[in-house]
Image 1 (tube, rainbow, N blue to C red):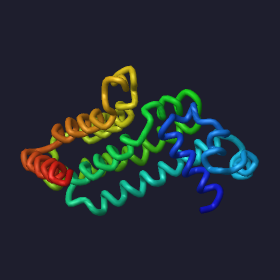
Image 2 (cartoon, rainbow, N blue to C red; image 1 turned 120 degrees about the vertical axis):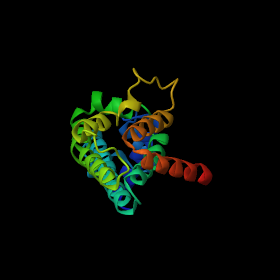
Image 3 (spheres, rainbow, N blue to C red; image 1 turned 90 degrees about the vertical axis):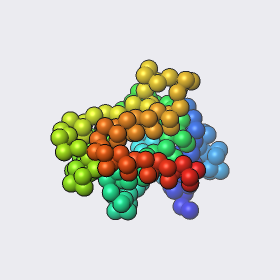
Length: 205
């Protein structure tokens, strides 16, 4: 593994555990077994490392979304596939990561919001259109409003003033939000699929 990749892999691990603000360049150097001089040959400062880590996450997120879209049996199944991936990611993540980005790395935070409001919004809208055509989502849905509603809920589990981290599990909050969203979309036929995929997940767990 090249030095840059090693730095990003270890920095990502540390950021997930401790948040972006608390991790120092000294800690990244220590955990990679590199000198700070070597790290500075690849990155000018910590901001560049944070930016690269977030860009990698965005790229991976896009790849996962495209794979789920291609492999899903239907629109409902696509949401369940996304739900499983999100729960894995959120379960490994320090709850302060988005708060840290917003406060201390605003330029990087803007990139994340652009990804949410552009790419993810399009994927949500495409899923709604597909679900209506399949007969699993209600025809009377206002697609533009529902898309905005879903997108605004993406970071809701990370808002400590709404869901205090000491009281609520982010994984559980994410699950409840998605299930509530999905039941609101579905026709009776779609709700049967929800039961099917929930039962399938229960058996596999």
